[in-house]
Length: 384
Image 1 (cartoon, rainbow, N blue to C red):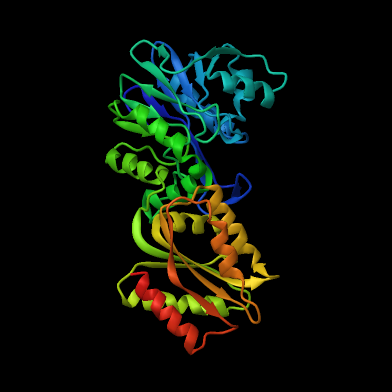
Image 2: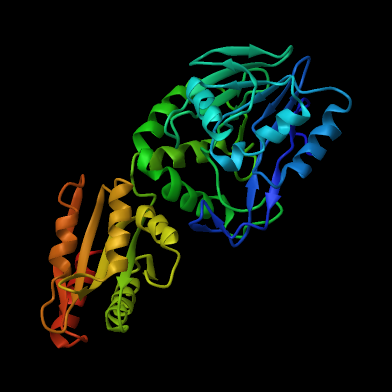
């Protein structure tokens, strides 16, 4: 049984069955549903797990508490991957009191229509004394649902951070790319719209001494915490994480993509870091990740029905939904008789903050020719 501190245990589970998280995010390396247990004069379980994985969760809980019963189940977040086992938990431990926000209490009654439960509703800075451990509750609405709360253990200086600082991937899979890649895809895919709310929550953490961060997904973070806190600050302020160019291509027959490959070659000769994606064939959430990671973005699109090839429209709408800002954008359009894509793409960013367009707009008529190649070369110089 994994111990986090003398009294705090990890009792979460791994999921290698689900193919799409939230029915949209590919899970090539599984998912962790994290739950934690504090063993004190009073016992508290920090969150449940996704329904279907409760047997492993119950087994781990029983290994720790032996013949005792949990006093509290803290409900940080009501999304079903963290709450759908609560009904079965209360059937097993009916005397347990749920600790949750008023909004979470309302949602409990929505998800579990006929369930009767004891509850302790908490608000900002309320505390719960377990004996040695005193828990402080921090409201974190819209990260990324309105009922969310963080919990801070004042004794061991552990932050239970709900979905904040989470990542994709089961914990029995060692990710060779480290924490940031799948954490970035998770953040910008799921939380990215709510940068202002993340900033508000981060400000509440600034005066806390934090030794360990226990998120609801991903590994326990117990070293180099400044890195995780700083990168979350960067992401939630919509600032670029790295200098580089992400080229997003929406190509019908491949000619627009070939132009993007040429631009990538030109940029790399200048020593610029470049990532290139075919939007039609790659996980679009990986593409959002790279668009937010780098300080420069190239949008390359074939004209389709006098507007955008559909996947580019989807991609841009996703960026706008996530408040894309503080970047340089360059445009490449292709059209065999009436190129229109650049005009449409530029108009979509009219209300975005701090977007600078880089000239020239590269205009391709079917395939690259000397004129459009020269435009690509000029664009590469201006993207330096």
